[in-house]
Image 1 (spheres, rainbow, N blue to C red):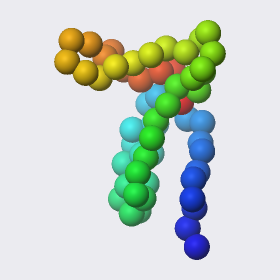
Image 2 (cartoon, rainbow, N blue to C red):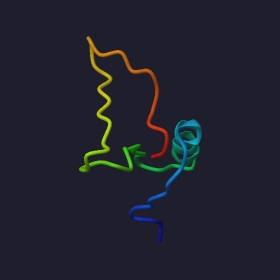
Image 3 (tube, helix red, strand yellow):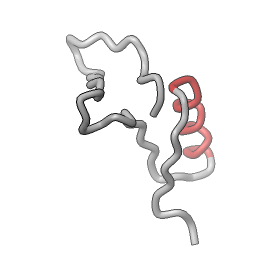
Image 4 (cartoon, helix red, strand yellow):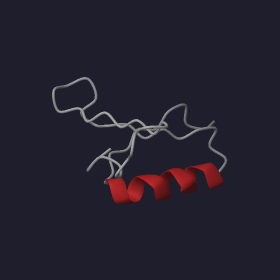
Length: 60
């Protein structure tokens, strides 16, 4: 039986590579979120036309 959900705190430099590794291991999806989501420290990032994304959060 595989994982239903796995939550890991990592720095932004590791997040993309770690999600790539999970996908290579046949994960169905990988999600990167702001660890401060829902708090006053949240930093919204929108990767949509008209928004320039400088990078991911310091820690996910």
